[in-house]
Length: 124
Image (cartoon, rainbow, N blue to C red; front, side):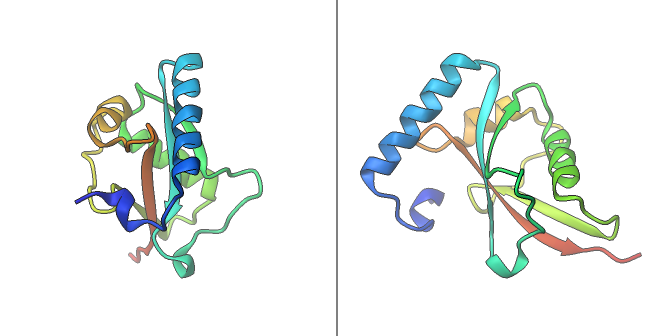
């Protein structure tokens, strides 16, 4: 199943522009992973900060767990809140996997890694 085909349609020119942007980022920052963060549902979106861009350059050596912790800090989550991150809409990578391994396996045709988040309430 191709996750990109489930997202709102992106025109060919926009897709080409994104691919060129990602290729340029990979040339200038070869150890970083170009990543786009998206909410799974608008009503579940986390409080947005005007300084929180939807695009990130993540160090390839970070584990998926470290990436999750970076997002928790950026979203300024309460301890009672949790986020679930998925790649390609359905895959939850192992937390110990490096972002480089996740990128190599799940990157899109436009060379970005698409990560979606869902807010979860945790009580206890």
